[in-house]
Image 1 (cartoon, rainbow, N blue to C red):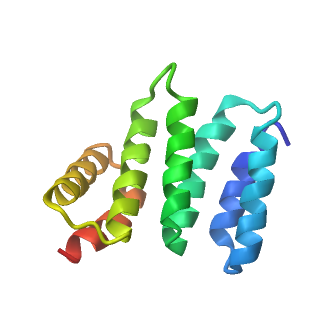
Image 2: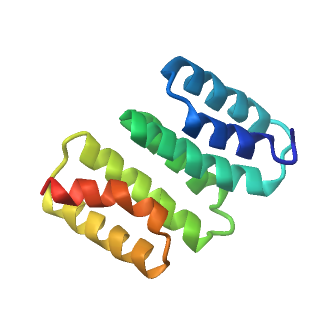
Length: 133
């Protein structure tokens, strides 16, 4: 489980329709991360956990997972992680109803960065938010 457990659990949580089970799976992964896990688990899991919470509209949890990823990578920032952190925060802000110009501009910036990096799987939520404007 320390090799790929949290990564597998994050992917599993993305497939679940039951919100209680999703929550349990995410908690189980976090318990594993609190132990001795390889680095890729943190990077993969936090991205997937943010996505699970975005799909569920649990904005505070999106922010919490974005913050956890930011803290984990603080010593050695990774551009891809920074992009997912920014995506999580801005989509959580937007999901809470924040439609100020700074949020809209950040949505556009994040959209452009993901497009440039050809990470198209991360675009639908940003596109949906921008369509509301």
